[in-house]
Structures are given as structure tokens and as C-alpha cells.
Length: 263
Image 1 (spheres, rainbow, N blue to C red):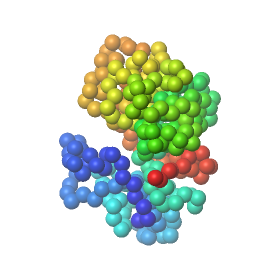
Image 2 (spheres, rainbow, N blue to C red):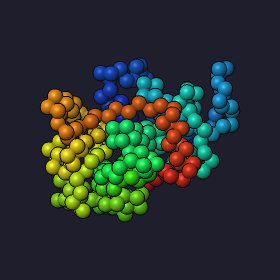
Image 3 (cartoon, rainbow, N blue to C red):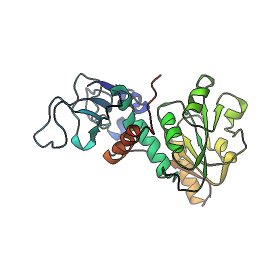
């Protein structure tokens, strides 16, 4: 083990908030799922890796084990780590970068090659783990990105490629109003604390909010919008990383199109 990253879900597991869905399965439990390091030993059925290989891996929420000197990783959720990426930078990728990627390419419909129609996108908490990847990934497509963050991170988020950045503590930030007056086709909501009523006035006719930390009220609004055939939608997203997702974000890192920023 050379590095591990922690995500909000790790804190929820430690507080026991995931026990209703049997995570962790048993105690004691060692947290952290996103790791990077060097292979020291492989099982008899492993064919893709050998001792000495540098890798990045996702261990799985129910298994964990990242905060340790050694960890057991499944070959099917492990990929080679590019030499240009440090262990600490690589360890940030699995949950955070993949969540951003899935949110943008699936419910949001952003094509990374930029061939899709122009979309106006709002990314909340854009200086955070998922948010800072989401800004970079969104700008690979044909998008205009508005982002929210705290005052001290305005320049940082702008440097990631955001077209507009709003301090969430200002009056405009509280109502998520675009400085240019644009209506949002998609909101990638990486933060809590905003009810549907805050988003709705700023959405385009067929706009949707993708909630990455859905609560019971999120699920109720989601169901209500479906039942009433509303053009504006709230989409709860629970991301389960796949090795294909991990290979893709690592490929973007290797190509210089995506980076992990460690404060």
C-alpha cells in the first residue's frame, strides 16, 4: 500500500449509517476502498499482474481494507497505474472520478468527444473530490459549465476549466443563479442542503438534477416527478464502479485530460 483516499461514504460506514444495507458485513472493519500501491504477491489465478507492478484498485464498500500496510485487491477491479501518476493522485480516482464520469455520460448524456449538442451544466461543490473531476470531464464535451464553491477556491475551479464560478455563500450562489443568466440543462449536484425548489427556477424546459447523495426526500421528489410526467426531473444516482470505468479515467489521466488535485 502506497496511498488510499477516503470518501464521504467511508464516514457514513464508520458512523454505522450503512448498516441497514449490511455494510460492513462484519466487524472489525478496516475502512477505505480506493487504493494505489505496488503488487507484492499474486494469487494462483491472477494473470494480468505480477509482483512489482504499480496499480490502482477499488476494493468494494463491503470489503474495505485500504487503511492498512497491505490490502487484498481483486484482479477484476485493478488496473495498471501510469508512471506519470503518483500513488496519492491515483488513489483519488476510483469512487470520485468514476462517479463524476458516470453522472455526466449516462443521465446527463455528455459525450466526451464533444459531438453532442451544447449543454449548460451546473456543478455544485466543484472544488471537492467528485466536483473537481466533474468540471474537467464536463469540459471534454460540448458544454458551458457553471460551478459553485467557496470564495477561496474560485480561482482553482476556474483553472479546471469552468466557464463561470459562483461563491455559494453569495445571494446569487444561494439561488444557484448563472452569472450569464443561462438556464441549466443538467445539474450535477455534489453537495447537500439544496431543496428541489432551489433548482427548479434555474432549469431549462427539460432540465434535470442528478443528485449524487440522494436522501429519502430526493427519492420522494424523483417519484413525484415521474408520476406527474414532469419535463424537469430529479435523478438520484448511486454509482457502482466497474473496471471499465476505472480503465477509462486512468486512460484520461495518461492522456493529460484529467488530473487529481490534492490540497
